[in-house]
Image 1: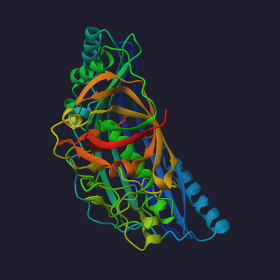
Image 2: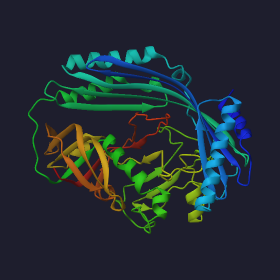
Image 3: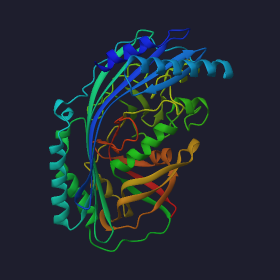
Image 4: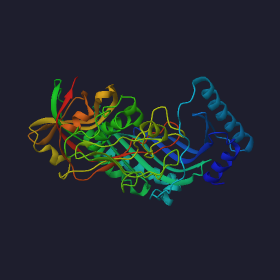
Length: 452
């Protein structure tokens, strides 16, 4: 039985009631290989189906989920969702959920690769062997993951929505660690395993770990920086959660609340949520079956939109932009899942370094957390490849540093971008597989505040 057929069968188990019901079915098949110290350490295979039923009663959405697909289990799951909705409606009153979306035409995406869906473990074994060979040649140890997934999602509702899509994704992370303790980092993501380049990743990671020279300890202060795409993606992802989130916007927790239409970043910043961009992990519709479409967020430095699901769109008096992350909406609110930052004119990150007399080159950021979300003030540390830039060249390693700065402020002080955006993804999954990524280039920022 296909996920869409299962969704429609589960929908039949839910009583229509006064508000109707919506069902999301996710079937995941995936394989993950982990490795450490140039040896495989773990292999995990998943073949699972999740049915999530949302029931609307009195303006409240109750939800329940199950991994069992027999009729009795689906009926029990639907009953639990209905009981939850009724309990909320009776105790907390009408939350104003406007009703599940009506069906709309969904434009197909290029999301599926048949070879990747075979979940061929020998491909992963070969990828690990290449990484190990490179690491041993550089005298370092390789650690990381290789994973591929085949996910089919279907949404059916009492309003007539009936959509499904099948997606594949592939990801590899290589963290090389030298005997000195210095480390390097490189990742790649794609919807096709054949696009991954394990040897190139290992070479990039090993070269950073094996660089000679004692690391320089810099004093806290403001430095010009060049951020590789992985570091840029961390900042943009946090912006997605905090600033472009329609719920945060409505609750005046977003840095964009009351500021749409204002210039907030450098003119070179053009950021959008583009679910069909060629290098992104494409998606056709959201968890409520609403079609996705390109949505500009910052145009030439001016903030123009936030994202909405059905619930926040109703409160804002607008339409859903197709960014629900759960049926009936998530408590975290809607978030953009296909962020794309358009590139600039620099050939690469090395060219971005040329105008810098003394600054810092950052491979990635780690443990990034909000300090004051309304100001997009974040803190975190550099990791796995931090270097000194002197007279336009990357010269020596730098002891990792803590930064505390505003994400929007960094985009405001952005001076130049490399030409070619790349897809970055952390490739880690906690719970159901939901592969996302940010497509962005490397950037040069006039100053970034380091606090320790």
